Length: 83
Image (cartoon, rainbow, N blue to C red; front, side, top):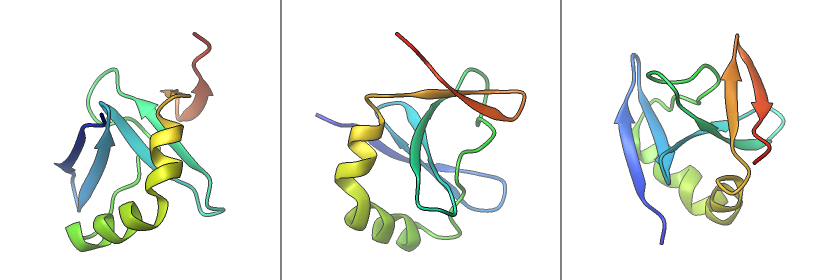
């Protein structure tokens, strides 16, 4: 079962699924980012909760699959976590 949270950001809201922040790149690539301290660099910030809900309904399966292959933010670059 997935845990889904909407977290306040500086100018909007972040989506957390299974404890990982979600990032959607301009090309459509979706990644899950493990946060080590605060909100990680690269986490997408949506302007409204409605925008997050629309994103979730459209990409739910891809987002949940992305949480199985998490990344971490290192000096502004996303690196795959090989476990």
